[in-house]
Image (cartoon, rainbow, N blue to C red; front, side):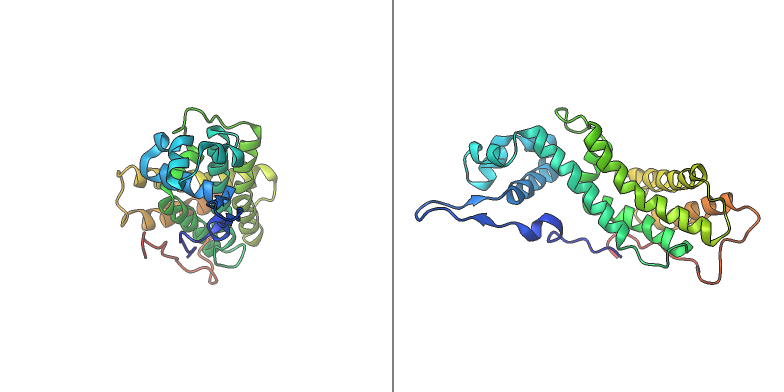
Length: 233
């Protein structure tokens, strides 16, 4: 399973800029972003003021402005970081490309990412911060994270003798993504229990695959049933 620790991503690179003797070190952009994420996770959008971030770091607001132009730029960076983590989770999903196991593992990676960083997940797919409206560049970041799902759908269809046309590949990829997103969103809203989601997710993904190839048994010998791990396992 994709490991979820607070040390991944930019946290590993949080270092302070050395200042002349007698002055406190200035935080790097990575440190400012880490502080912003922590406040966002604990306090929501109201925690993302430049003043709150500066106070949490013990520096002036000007230092924060020197790393990011303001709140919209900070929110954009958090948005992009969330999709970077999701893309990394997809890349780490186990299973041979083209196997049902791989598709199910990617579904589990999607859920793991959302549960590990629910505030970022809400920012990626919602509008919790009024000052941030995704533009073309932000949407491009989101679309890029969808590409591994497209690649997995294409590989699965190729291995199982399915259609190779782009329209079919994209339709399958979108269906799998939508199923995962719906279940995870309901779980985060408290409408589905953590125990109920893994078997439901596996059943839904398998049903989607079977619908694409109704004449075939998609449970091939190399792709036995895979239990999607429950949260915290």
